[in-house]
Length: 497
Ligand SMILES: Cc1cc2nc3c(=O)[nH]c(=O)nc-3n(C[C@H](O)[C@H](O)[C@H](O)COP(=O)(O)OP(=O)(O)OC[C@H]3O[C@@H](n4cnc5c(N)ncnc54)[C@H](O)[C@@H]3O)c2cc1C
Image (cartoon, rainbow, N blue to C red; front, side, top):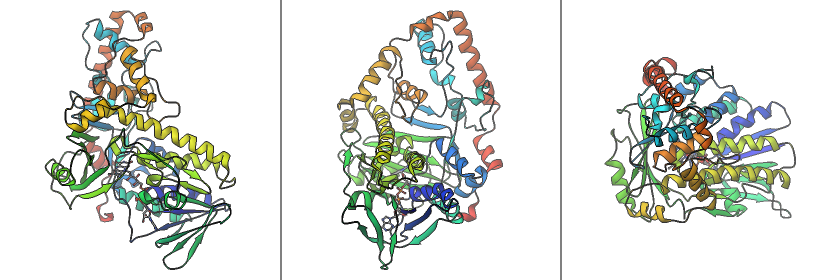
């Protein structure tokens, strides 16, 4: 079977790298078509911890990957200006589940009883380390408080795509440079048969992965796949992006700062900082957005801000006919929780289960689409929660506070407020600690708690809370700084830039 990938951005080359293992079986061949003239979207630098599993699965050396992509470590995302105080969504847990009951129930109980209890952030190792600017690898011993977190990376998106390209081409993936001017289809069943290049050459194949970015040349433009629009919940539709000289602190976390008509990201790499302002064109002008971004940088801009346009939503059927849309061609959710590269990874890992059958098998399509849809939908709700629960007064924020929520989210917020109960999404991306971080960070505070927590004697609870907090504080104090760990483990190899 021949698999053709259209597009050489992060999505295309991640697919190629992952599928390159199949080339070795000799039952599959993989060819990727990309156009240097068109280029890539050029953003996408903050990730989730899952990327480590993706790289590890390919057998990639972590230090080598970090040196080549100028990567830094990431323990979570700081949200400034969203709730009353800045808060961090950590890649780690809050406290421990005592007697099988979630930590938030014990914490709420102690707080309501009026006993001395610290802010919930103080019981998260990942948050304490992030705030202190520290980083060391997690312990493997599950009894250690240093095992209660995971980590991701910030990296240079172009260098990462190049790194994946080297990996894939060395393992047998064929690269063809050229602009696709026509998508050829079987007249009877509509399946795609080949991609005609400007040169006149035609790249034929059995299964096509549409990784052509926002243009979605095959799944969107050719097959006209329906699109589910989510602008009514996520009205941001533009971003200005600009890198700055790396003069600020190399924080081990991404920062997302709420602004008058959207929010601004700060992503520290080893050699520079990525910045951008995601905004809604219904609530501000492009000129004003550009000015707001430039007025809020902590280093000198290295180029003119670049404008990107998008729409929140997803393709209703990512896999249709013999075409699978991956990456921006399959949908878009603003990068508030750094989820797009994860969505690429999830799509490839799901697709790999179904390769080998007919490339237009409706059963495989159904299973794949259901799985990808669930992940998209759960992320959509998680993002909406950030917008919903703010006290900001500008028109965008009033609009999002008053909008009707998807039913899937409304009931969950009510359950948390009422009982501290976190209803996770089956097969969704974010687990309960992530939801807890955003709920509490944005002042969605439970009025009740699981009464099973009352079984723990109060004096014992107070002692446990105190011990846990002390252990976290002492162990974080002993960690090396993030910058020291970077310098010893994976200093950027600057000649690659
Ligand atoms: C403002 C913004 C910020 C983002 N931040 C993050 C983030 O922090 N974290 C994260 O995970 N994700 C982020 N993303 C998403 C992330 O950038 C993308 O998911 C990721 O880069 C994958 O893009 P892609 O490969 O699908 O598309 P692209 O990078 O656009 O690649 C498309 C490819 O298709 C090729 N192509 C298109 N048409 C043709 C043609 N006719 N012929 C030949 N080739 C063609 C292009 O040349 C290119 O190689 C962000 C996105 C935006 C818009």
